[in-house]
Amino acid sequence: MSDVSRETSAADALGPPPASVVTLAGQQEPLLQRYAAWLATEAVPRGLIGPREVPRLWDRHILNCLVITSLVPAGSRVADVGSGAGLPGLVLAIVRPDLRVVLIEPLLRRTAFLDDVVVDLALPNTEVHRGRAEHFTGAPFDVVVSRAVAPLGRLLSWCMPLVRPHGELLALKGATAAAEVAQSRSALHSCGASSWSVRQVGADYVDPPTTVVRVVAGPARR
Ligand SMILES: C[S@@+](CC[C@H](N)C(=O)[O-])C[C@H]1O[C@@H](n2cnc3c(N)ncnc32)[C@H](O)[C@@H]1O
Image (cartoon, rainbow, N blue to C red):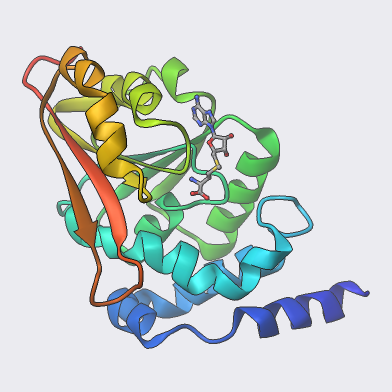
């Protein structure tokens, strides 16, 4: 199959954005479509997205991330730990130009893809950092987001040192969220969290809604 016909069939498989994407993305929707096209085309041969994921990119991946934008305070500095192909960090950066977003990802193949997307979309609020979260030494963040990276206990040890005092971790989780919180009680206490909760977000826009573990940092972090 030629590159052109492969890209055409991938774009066909992606389909148009659902109404909820149009509503939530507002005037940023054309830019979000451009990112979705990168996911449906380049990300597949580069091994970042499985071909079978393309028909469900909008619902299962992009909308799953898009609905958490309402949880992020205006003007936040945000890190996406284990960004992969940019989920949820690039979605946040695209629809929320008020945010400053750092995509933290150790694998070169993935950071190369992220760099290409950031350049193509001309995103001035986005930086790609190649490295593991636990080795990150930059300034702490208002909000750290992470999706499909590690069990909650390990995620806390990687991410909470990156959260500023009174900042928060938003971990996008599936059906295991409540059980992971229950299993991570001692880690939640020892990482300096002041509170935590499990929330369902976006029930009006996506089925199933996105399950988010929100962990608020206490006053005395690094
Ligand atoms: C299953 S992928 C999920 C990617 C993306 N967040 C998503 O939802 O599609 C997990 C990602 O976490 C990255 N990762 C694994 N360990 C990490 C660490 N210690 N620090 C930062 N990223 C890590 C991997 O390289 C991989 O890209």
